[in-house]
Length: 382
Image 1: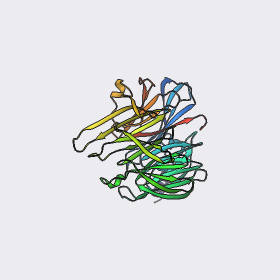
Image 2: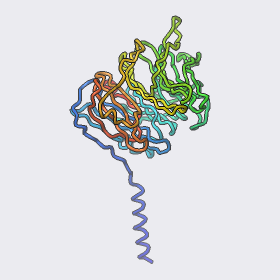
Image 3: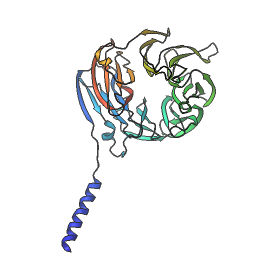
Image 4: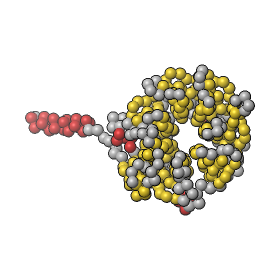
């Protein structure tokens, strides 16, 4: 009996010891071996979406501050070891405001707020079915579908104090709101109505940020998605179409003589993602027709002043042609180099490809699952 008791105590102690161990997924540091060009940009955060339901959203970092380029894979888990579920399910947006990094985690219903210099978590804001974040005057504005996935309700924009991380107000906009942009103290919200297919929303909500009220809605196009402002005060809003009768295209909006934003025109190219630097709008896009079963793809640059496409291709390199599922684009603000995000098969590691400003290929690295959203870290932000 005494012998069995000793064995039982030994096993119990062993199990207890195992349960107190912390399991940390350590980051991987890959030296790309390419010399860096010293600019104001110190690096770039890359948020990997992960497949919905897989809880595999991860954060990577491209370090451009050393002599050679380094790619740090899965940094969040190591720098935040007490976060049991790490980032969560489906990363939907990444932005830097002041000295803080904001990460919108869609299906986990939260916005993670970290120090921009090292991605250490400072807090979080709980927002249901959150989509994108924009900033103005010390506040963050977060779009929300409000209801659960595939349940269509009128969407909201939540107003968050960026210092206290407290929600201070919210406002109803259109159905399934996506990206936002701020021009002259007004917030423009692209409403998609994605859960209402084929009865999509087609409006941009105009919210006066001084009173936080919706002034009006602008009829733009079917199933809106991206919404970005250029340096001329124009808005660039993408329409994903309905895959049948309405094609995907990009609209530009400008203020009329009374200062009211109005649709100025459209360009008949599909735009899935875009990045504006100076007067150049870099884009890629694809559009599928359920009627003809045709897939239309487009890549290039649009001059935001003339509203004309000025380049048909981003690159003619063999590496560009080998991209499987182009999923994101971001352009270096200083040297116009650009980075393309390849989701590959959507279920395993993707790739980040770097191209010089002339379109020539430079290097590529392995990322997390479904690389989708990137933001540069500058010296002032760090």
